[in-house]
Every structure is written in C-alpha cells, then in structure tokens.
Image (cartoon, rainbow, N blue to C red):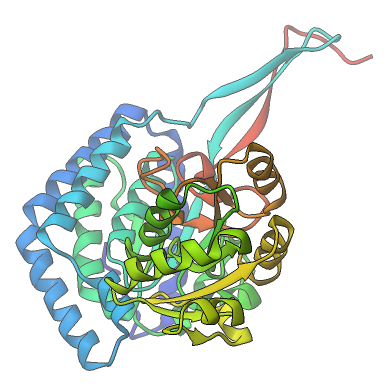
Length: 428
C-alpha cells in the first residue's frame, strides 16, 4: 500500500499522486470483474483484520487524539476522531454486513422487447476509481473502502491529518484483506501525505479518477467544488429542521426534537433549527425547552420564542443559516405550514428535514414541497444514515440532484449502461 521507496510524497508529490492514480486505474479493472464471492471473502478478511488490530488501533488513535487536542481541534471534531473498543467492533461488524448485502454489479434490469426484435436492458456497473476526501472520522476509511470494494470500484482515500495514524493502520487492514482474497491491494490506497496540495492534485486527475466524494466542512467542499476537474458527489452542510405542526402529538414531538438534537451533536443529520406552529407554541415550547435544558442545549429564538422562553437568547439572521454541530439550537415560531416550508427552503441546506404531525394533508404537502435529500414524518432527522436506511453503510450523504441523492450506498457507487440482445437483426 505504501508508495515505492524511490517515489514518495516527500520527494515528488505530483509524480507520487500520478503513480497512485495509475495503480488505482489498473486495480479498478480487476475489481470490476471480481466475483461476488471473492469480494465477500475480502470483506470478511478485512473484518477479521480490524478485530485483530484493535489494540494497535486504539493506541494509534490515542496518539492522534493527543496531537489533535494539543492543536486545539474543536470538540465536535474530536468526538468524530475518537475510536473506542465498541466503535472498532462496530466497524468490523459493519464490514460483515456489507458482505451480506446483494451485489449490484452485473444486475440486468428493464429488459424490454422492441419492434425490431431486439431486447434492450440496462446493466449496473462500477463507476471506476473513486477519490474520497474526508476529515476527522477514521470509520470513513473503512466504510468508504469496503463500499467501494463491494461495488467493484477502486478508491483513493485522503483523510484528515488529525487522523493520519488511525487511517493508515485501518487502510493497512483493508489492503491485507484484499490480498488475502486474491484481489489487488492497490484497489484501496491511502494518500501518504498530509500536504494540502495532494488534495488539489487528486481532484485534477480525470485520467485516473472518475468521481470525487468529499466529506468535510463547508470550506473544504467549496474549495473542491471550485478546483475539481472530476465530477463530485457532495453536500455542503447539514442545516436540518424539525417542524412541529399544529396537529402534532406534542409528547411525541418533544421526544423527536430532543433526539434529533442530542443523539449526536457532531453529525450532519442533527437538527439545527426547530420550527413550531404558533397554535401549539405556548404549550410545546416550555416542555421541549425543559427537556433540552437537561442536555445543556442553548436556545436562540425569534421574538415569539423569547417571549415564551425567557432563558432563550435572541436569534440573529445568521443563526437560521448555521450548522452548529454542538449544543445550540435555533427556534422559530411560525404561523403556518407555508411559512415553515418557506423557511426551510430559504435557510436550509437540502439535507434532511422532518415534520411532526397527525394531519395527513399537511404531511403530504411537506413531503412533496420540501426539496431535501431526505424528508421525514414523525421521526428525528438523525435517522438520515446509511445504516438506518438499510444500505449497510454510506460513503456520504449527497444533496446533489444528479446521480445520487441522500445516503450513498452500493447502488450510488454504480452506474448503468444499456445492453442490447439481438439474434442477427439488421437495421434497414
């Protein structure tokens, strides 16, 4: 997995990146033709290797955490960086779950006879080489690598410098599992450089890379969107909303709102703004505020919210746009479903938004009119996750509208080509 001794990131970064790309392109050919059983064998070997390396992974992660803490990394990012014995086991179990998922590659569908006698269908095929750029989360190394593996792709990983030791050791376990199954270890490569220039080079190699998947903060995504010469599957941020309708079950609404905010502050599916219909605000807001206070959540509200909740700070215009990734919540009282939908459209990020209601017409309108990658009913936004959607894992959550939208699992890492079945027909 490491670059050859004569060509390392420190000697010639541009040449090193091209060599990584060339190896990935060659490996993608082998991955595209790999049998399902061989891919599953590799996945099970990877799960075993991760478990066997658990103590080494905890030590590598401890060193990463120590350096990141010294460098002043924010608490939400430290939370994403941290590995535990339980999270390592969850990673390994997640790999085994991917092995159990149906293999989409080679699936032929929509076969239709034509007047010519030809039968026209579509076959699902890998995308090729996928470059993945991410920050903080070591589990992304495993999720991304194994999803790409099962879907017949090669991948180039560029994790954040704060997780370098954890990522490198995890990538080594992936490479080991690939080779055990007779597949090329170069099908998954971790860029052995923390130089930011490596990212710029990766997104400018359309000869070697077919798709870029960035996972990180808004600044990173905006930079890559400007620089990339390779198509991207991306989302900028997760400014998610829960709207409590006039017809909501208020006890259920309290539970949904609290879980949406406090399940984990640092995930992109965490609720950042709570919208409450004016007809239920006087009853609902004191109840939800008391529940959130027990979690230490700070409230920033509109004038109507602050009138009902003296402990809330006055929200600024910027608060409605903000993805806090921490124990802060913006709260707004709205006079109608129309106002709630308009607020989400103007301030939201098209990631995940939820309505709590028993009114079927309101629910139907919310589902149709809220233009987000996931729209939920009577459920917290933190459910926006590949595992929860039955995808086994996710490579990211896309707020794009083309190719893939929402949690991107195996199917999102493939494309379709037309296949044509004939019996010697000639076009006249």
